[in-house]
Length: 83
Image: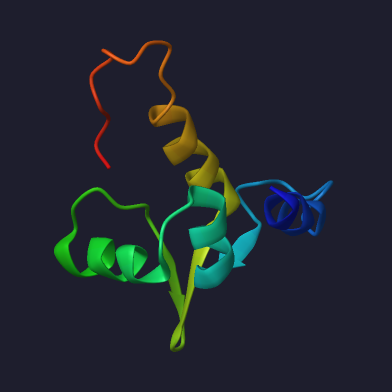
């Protein structure tokens, strides 16, 4: 949790649609292995939209937050989201 707080604090006051995070930070926020993000990019399934700048992959904070919101559940029998 401290890692997430540390990452998010770097973007405090910045519009989440403009904040671009590294793959490693995106993986921490989504609680997945960076390889999972790579698999999602390759397969086009269950992933999060990303931006490619030169050779660098970046994820918009707004898209990461959207993915988390889609994964929210209120009960263990709730249907799983697309992830």
